[in-house]
Image (cartoon, rainbow, N blue to C red; front, side):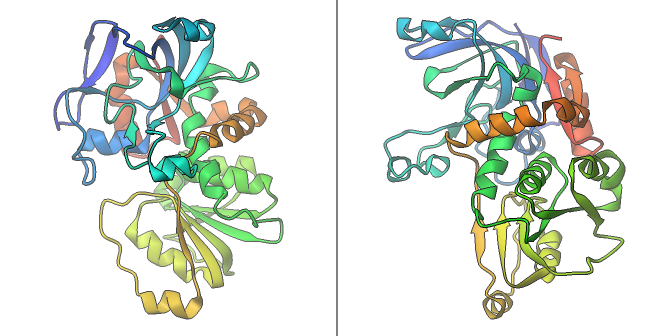
Length: 334
């Protein structure tokens, strides 16, 4: 099979032929159709701080769709021929957090494509426990976005009270920020998606077709304070700017990961009663809502995706790092 393998800390892949994985107990084999390039993949690609745990050689990729072609267990044979995605977080199910339903913060969490081989290959194996069939009304190309949409679902659930009466600032026009904004628009909120001037043409402007207004932070300040802040940019500078736009008593939900320490003047947070809530990953239940949101918008979402063949994986990563696009997806069998 053809696979894109990260072999070193250099910003490049070795695209080469590898043996098709051999199944073990509880596993299934998936023929991969599409695999998205995630922010975590970019961090692993550049060997960023916080990703030292990534051991190479490794096949990256945790946002993928495909078809089950083989199972180890007879009980899993009903999955053969089904189009599926795979939950990115492989939780233990036994720790305190798992038992309370908080799978995204499992004490023993391992992520496919970061801790072990993922979907940037023509075939991938995984435990059947984490396989989720794709609804028949959703094409595999769009279903590959289920994991980032599930992350957005998880984040928006942190503020279930948001309604049409609220103004929400979403910082960061990447795919997570875009999906958070899309879900909030569906709740009736007035959504402002912010980014830099360089983001406008390729990323920010696309949000305007989905009911969001946009703000270029290095050109203009917002004219009114907002009720909620969703920080999806990962920029320490954006964190400071976001709080300046938040009403007294407003709520900040932090979804991004940061390469650098963020300094906050806690007295300011206390005096304004700004609760800080964090949202990490997603839980199994979030995928059903993600499928629904993707299906509802499937005809429009293709316009935000830039497709690359697996052989051009380095080009996909370089374009993503330069922020030349909103979402890059590898067409693995293409």
